[in-house]
Length: 288
Image (cartoon, rainbow, N blue to C red; front, side, top):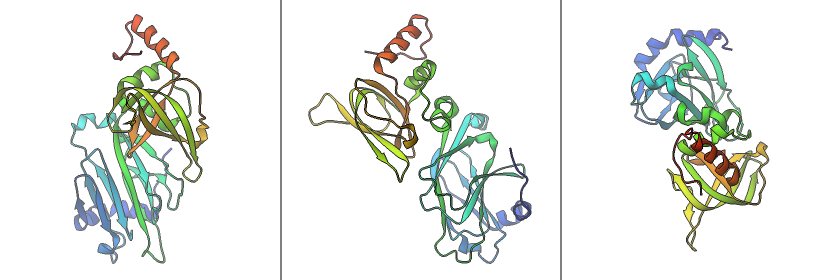
Protein backbone atom coordinates (compact mmCIF):
# COMPACT_ATOMS: atom_id res chain seq x y z
CA UNK A 1 0.00 0.00 0.00
CA UNK A 2 1.46 3.34 -0.98
CA UNK A 3 1.95 5.99 1.65
CA UNK A 4 1.50 9.71 1.17
CA UNK A 5 4.73 11.62 0.58
CA UNK A 6 6.33 13.43 3.50
CA UNK A 7 6.22 17.24 3.32
CA UNK A 8 9.90 17.46 2.43
CA UNK A 9 9.50 14.95 -0.36
CA UNK A 10 6.42 16.72 -1.63
CA UNK A 11 8.41 19.93 -1.92
CA UNK A 12 11.02 18.04 -3.89
CA UNK A 13 8.39 16.67 -6.25
CA UNK A 14 6.79 20.08 -6.67
CA UNK A 15 10.20 21.53 -7.42
CA UNK A 16 10.93 18.89 -10.02
CA UNK A 17 10.78 21.08 -13.09
CA UNK A 18 12.99 23.79 -11.65
CA UNK A 19 15.58 21.28 -10.50
CA UNK A 20 15.37 19.18 -13.64
CA UNK A 21 16.05 22.13 -15.89
CA UNK A 22 19.18 22.99 -13.94
CA UNK A 23 20.42 19.46 -13.34
CA UNK A 24 19.78 17.26 -16.38
CA UNK A 25 22.06 14.28 -16.94
CA UNK A 26 21.85 11.54 -19.53
CA UNK A 27 23.72 8.35 -20.42
CA UNK A 28 22.93 5.15 -22.28
CA UNK A 29 23.37 2.48 -19.62
CA UNK A 30 24.96 3.84 -16.47
CA UNK A 31 25.21 7.13 -14.63
CA UNK A 32 27.79 8.43 -12.20
CA UNK A 33 27.43 11.84 -10.61
CA UNK A 34 28.10 13.95 -7.56
CA UNK A 35 25.84 15.92 -5.28
CA UNK A 36 28.59 18.49 -4.94
CA UNK A 37 27.57 19.92 -8.32
CA UNK A 38 24.47 21.38 -6.68
CA UNK A 39 25.35 21.25 -2.98
CA UNK A 40 24.28 24.88 -2.58
CA UNK A 41 20.83 23.96 -3.96
CA UNK A 42 19.98 21.03 -1.75
CA UNK A 43 16.36 20.94 -2.89
CA UNK A 44 17.27 20.34 -6.53
CA UNK A 45 15.95 17.23 -8.22
CA UNK A 46 18.17 15.82 -10.93
CA UNK A 47 16.81 13.83 -13.86
CA UNK A 48 18.72 10.78 -15.10
CA UNK A 49 17.75 8.99 -18.32
CA UNK A 50 18.97 5.45 -19.02
CA UNK A 51 18.15 3.48 -22.17
CA UNK A 52 19.64 0.02 -21.63
CA UNK A 53 18.26 -3.18 -20.16
CA UNK A 54 21.00 -3.19 -17.51
CA UNK A 55 23.45 -0.80 -15.95
CA UNK A 56 24.18 1.07 -12.74
CA UNK A 57 23.73 4.28 -10.78
CA UNK A 58 26.50 5.70 -8.59
CA UNK A 59 25.70 8.93 -6.74
CA UNK A 60 28.58 10.32 -4.72
CA UNK A 61 28.05 12.85 -1.92
CA UNK A 62 24.24 12.68 -2.34
CA UNK A 63 22.28 15.90 -1.81
CA UNK A 64 18.80 16.75 -3.02
CA UNK A 65 17.23 13.98 -5.07
CA UNK A 66 17.44 11.97 -8.29
CA UNK A 67 14.68 10.72 -10.52
CA UNK A 68 15.86 7.76 -12.57
CA UNK A 69 13.99 7.35 -15.85
CA UNK A 70 14.45 3.90 -17.37
CA UNK A 71 13.55 4.15 -21.06
CA UNK A 72 14.76 0.99 -22.83
CA UNK A 73 14.96 1.01 -26.61
CA UNK A 74 11.79 -1.02 -27.07
CA UNK A 75 8.27 -0.10 -28.09
CA UNK A 76 6.59 1.83 -25.29
CA UNK A 77 3.62 -0.53 -25.54
CA UNK A 78 5.87 -3.35 -24.28
CA UNK A 79 6.92 -1.48 -21.13
CA UNK A 80 3.98 -2.98 -19.21
CA UNK A 81 5.52 -6.41 -19.69
CA UNK A 82 8.79 -5.42 -18.02
CA UNK A 83 9.98 -6.09 -14.49
CA UNK A 84 12.67 -3.87 -12.95
CA UNK A 85 15.16 -5.31 -10.46
CA UNK A 86 17.77 -3.33 -8.53
CA UNK A 87 20.65 -4.58 -6.39
CA UNK A 88 22.16 -1.95 -4.04
CA UNK A 89 25.93 -1.82 -3.75
CA UNK A 90 27.32 -3.46 -0.64
CA UNK A 91 28.24 -0.15 1.01
CA UNK A 92 25.49 2.01 -0.47
CA UNK A 93 24.55 4.76 1.97
CA UNK A 94 23.31 8.34 2.08
CA UNK A 95 19.85 8.13 0.50
CA UNK A 96 16.48 6.40 0.57
CA UNK A 97 15.18 4.80 -2.62
CA UNK A 98 11.47 5.09 -3.37
CA UNK A 99 9.00 4.02 -6.02
CA UNK A 100 7.23 7.12 -7.28
CA UNK A 101 4.01 7.25 -9.28
CA UNK A 102 1.83 10.32 -9.77
CA UNK A 103 3.31 12.02 -6.72
CA UNK A 104 2.90 9.08 -4.33
CA UNK A 105 5.97 7.49 -2.79
CA UNK A 106 6.59 3.96 -1.55
CA UNK A 107 9.81 3.20 0.30
CA UNK A 108 11.82 0.54 -1.51
CA UNK A 109 15.27 0.63 0.13
CA UNK A 110 15.92 2.44 3.39
CA UNK A 111 19.23 4.26 3.84
CA UNK A 112 21.67 2.03 5.67
CA UNK A 113 19.85 -1.24 4.94
CA UNK A 114 22.65 -3.78 5.02
CA UNK A 115 20.77 -6.79 3.63
CA UNK A 116 23.60 -8.49 1.68
CA UNK A 117 22.95 -9.19 -1.99
CA UNK A 118 19.26 -8.39 -1.64
CA UNK A 119 17.46 -7.74 -4.91
CA UNK A 120 14.33 -5.57 -5.11
CA UNK A 121 11.95 -6.11 -8.03
CA UNK A 122 8.80 -4.36 -9.18
CA UNK A 123 6.67 -4.02 -12.28
CA UNK A 124 7.71 -1.26 -14.66
CA UNK A 125 4.19 0.17 -14.51
CA UNK A 126 4.35 0.47 -10.69
CA UNK A 127 6.36 3.66 -10.95
CA UNK A 128 9.81 5.15 -11.36
CA UNK A 129 12.78 5.39 -9.00
CA UNK A 130 12.98 8.45 -6.77
CA UNK A 131 16.20 8.69 -4.72
CA UNK A 132 16.28 11.24 -1.90
CA UNK A 133 19.42 12.08 0.05
CA UNK A 134 19.04 11.78 3.81
CA UNK A 135 20.24 14.59 6.12
CA UNK A 136 23.95 14.11 6.87
CA UNK A 137 26.47 15.99 9.00
CA UNK A 138 29.28 14.74 6.76
CA UNK A 139 28.60 13.63 3.17
CA UNK A 140 32.27 13.12 2.32
CA UNK A 141 32.10 9.32 2.51
CA UNK A 142 28.56 8.73 1.30
CA UNK A 143 27.90 6.92 -1.97
CA UNK A 144 24.47 5.67 -3.00
CA UNK A 145 24.55 3.14 -5.78
CA UNK A 146 22.92 0.10 -7.30
CA UNK A 147 22.83 -2.10 -10.37
CA UNK A 148 19.60 -2.44 -12.33
CA UNK A 149 18.15 -4.94 -14.78
CA UNK A 150 14.99 -4.96 -16.86
CA UNK A 151 13.39 -8.37 -17.40
CA UNK A 152 10.56 -9.55 -19.57
CA UNK A 153 7.84 -10.88 -17.27
CA UNK A 154 7.28 -13.77 -19.66
CA UNK A 155 10.80 -15.06 -19.05
CA UNK A 156 11.20 -14.31 -15.36
CA UNK A 157 9.29 -17.35 -14.00
CA UNK A 158 6.76 -14.81 -12.68
CA UNK A 159 9.53 -13.74 -10.32
CA UNK A 160 9.53 -17.20 -8.72
CA UNK A 161 13.24 -16.88 -7.98
CA UNK A 162 12.65 -13.53 -6.25
CA UNK A 163 9.30 -13.91 -4.48
CA UNK A 164 9.66 -17.55 -3.42
CA UNK A 165 13.20 -18.74 -4.21
CA UNK A 166 13.03 -21.85 -1.98
CA UNK A 167 9.70 -23.21 -3.20
CA UNK A 168 10.00 -26.26 -5.48
CA UNK A 169 8.86 -25.53 -9.02
CA UNK A 170 5.61 -27.01 -10.28
CA UNK A 171 5.64 -29.19 -13.40
CA UNK A 172 4.44 -26.22 -15.47
CA UNK A 173 7.16 -23.96 -14.06
CA UNK A 174 9.83 -26.56 -14.79
CA UNK A 175 8.73 -26.95 -18.42
CA UNK A 176 8.61 -23.18 -18.87
CA UNK A 177 12.00 -22.79 -17.20
CA UNK A 178 13.56 -25.30 -19.59
CA UNK A 179 12.40 -23.16 -22.52
CA UNK A 180 13.22 -19.70 -21.18
CA UNK A 181 16.16 -20.03 -18.77
CA UNK A 182 19.59 -18.56 -19.39
CA UNK A 183 21.13 -21.93 -18.58
CA UNK A 184 19.79 -25.50 -18.53
CA UNK A 185 22.04 -28.45 -17.64
CA UNK A 186 21.85 -32.01 -16.43
CA UNK A 187 24.28 -32.77 -13.63
CA UNK A 188 25.00 -33.64 -10.03
CA UNK A 189 25.83 -31.66 -6.90
CA UNK A 190 29.46 -32.12 -5.98
CA UNK A 191 29.50 -29.76 -3.01
CA UNK A 192 27.64 -26.88 -1.35
CA UNK A 193 29.48 -23.92 0.16
CA UNK A 194 27.57 -21.71 2.60
CA UNK A 195 28.48 -18.03 2.74
CA UNK A 196 26.96 -16.75 5.97
CA UNK A 197 28.01 -13.13 5.50
CA UNK A 198 26.45 -13.00 2.03
CA UNK A 199 23.43 -15.09 3.12
CA UNK A 200 23.95 -17.35 0.11
CA UNK A 201 24.83 -20.92 -0.73
CA UNK A 202 27.00 -21.83 -3.71
CA UNK A 203 26.14 -25.11 -5.44
CA UNK A 204 29.13 -26.71 -7.17
CA UNK A 205 27.73 -28.62 -10.14
CA UNK A 206 29.31 -31.25 -12.39
CA UNK A 207 27.25 -31.29 -15.60
CA UNK A 208 27.21 -34.19 -18.05
CA UNK A 209 24.84 -32.56 -20.55
CA UNK A 210 24.61 -28.92 -21.52
CA UNK A 211 21.26 -27.96 -23.06
CA UNK A 212 21.69 -24.19 -23.09
CA UNK A 213 23.71 -21.37 -21.60
CA UNK A 214 23.83 -17.71 -22.58
CA UNK A 215 26.89 -16.97 -20.50
CA UNK A 216 29.84 -19.22 -19.85
CA UNK A 217 28.59 -20.37 -16.45
CA UNK A 218 29.71 -23.92 -17.12
CA UNK A 219 33.23 -24.51 -18.36
CA UNK A 220 34.49 -27.77 -19.93
CA UNK A 221 36.69 -29.89 -17.68
CA UNK A 222 40.20 -30.86 -18.67
CA UNK A 223 39.12 -34.49 -19.07
CA UNK A 224 36.44 -33.51 -21.58
CA UNK A 225 32.87 -34.73 -21.87
CA UNK A 226 31.63 -32.80 -18.83
CA UNK A 227 31.34 -29.25 -17.51
CA UNK A 228 31.80 -27.59 -14.15
CA UNK A 229 30.07 -24.52 -12.76
CA UNK A 230 28.62 -22.73 -9.75
CA UNK A 231 25.03 -21.69 -9.08
CA UNK A 232 23.87 -19.45 -6.22
CA UNK A 233 20.76 -19.78 -4.07
CA UNK A 234 19.68 -18.06 -0.81
CA UNK A 235 21.19 -19.60 2.31
CA UNK A 236 17.71 -19.90 3.86
CA UNK A 237 16.84 -22.60 1.31
CA UNK A 238 19.13 -25.02 3.14
CA UNK A 239 20.32 -26.84 0.02
CA UNK A 240 22.53 -29.90 0.62
CA UNK A 241 24.47 -32.27 -1.62
CA UNK A 242 22.28 -35.07 -2.97
CA UNK A 243 22.83 -38.27 -4.90
CA UNK A 244 21.78 -38.67 -8.52
CA UNK A 245 21.26 -36.28 -11.41
CA UNK A 246 19.20 -33.11 -11.39
CA UNK A 247 18.06 -30.70 -14.09
CA UNK A 248 19.39 -27.25 -13.18
CA UNK A 249 17.65 -24.30 -14.81
CA UNK A 250 18.07 -20.66 -13.94
CA UNK A 251 19.02 -17.22 -15.11
CA UNK A 252 21.83 -14.74 -14.90
CA UNK A 253 21.18 -11.95 -12.44
CA UNK A 254 23.71 -9.15 -12.11
CA UNK A 255 26.41 -11.37 -13.58
CA UNK A 256 25.74 -14.36 -11.33
CA UNK A 257 24.01 -17.67 -12.06
CA UNK A 258 20.87 -17.95 -9.90
CA UNK A 259 18.94 -21.18 -9.52
CA UNK A 260 15.35 -21.22 -10.73
CA UNK A 261 14.28 -24.88 -10.81
CA UNK A 262 16.15 -28.09 -9.97
CA UNK A 263 13.96 -31.21 -10.17
CA UNK A 264 15.50 -34.64 -10.09
CA UNK A 265 16.25 -35.59 -13.66
CA UNK A 266 13.99 -38.64 -13.61
CA UNK A 267 11.11 -36.40 -12.52
CA UNK A 268 11.85 -34.01 -15.38
CA UNK A 269 11.81 -36.91 -17.85
CA UNK A 270 8.39 -37.95 -16.57
CA UNK A 271 6.83 -34.48 -16.73
CA UNK A 272 8.34 -33.77 -20.15
CA UNK A 273 6.99 -37.05 -21.59
CA UNK A 274 3.53 -36.46 -20.13
CA UNK A 275 3.39 -32.94 -21.58
CA UNK A 276 4.69 -34.06 -24.96
CA UNK A 277 2.16 -36.91 -25.18
CA UNK A 278 -0.60 -34.34 -24.62
CA UNK A 279 0.97 -31.81 -26.97
CA UNK A 280 1.43 -29.36 -24.10
CA UNK A 281 5.22 -29.05 -23.94
CA UNK A 282 6.09 -25.37 -24.59
CA UNK A 283 9.28 -26.26 -26.49
CA UNK A 284 11.28 -29.23 -27.76
CA UNK A 285 14.30 -30.36 -25.80
CA UNK A 286 15.95 -33.77 -25.72
CA UNK A 287 15.17 -35.14 -22.23
CA UNK A 288 17.66 -38.04 -22.43
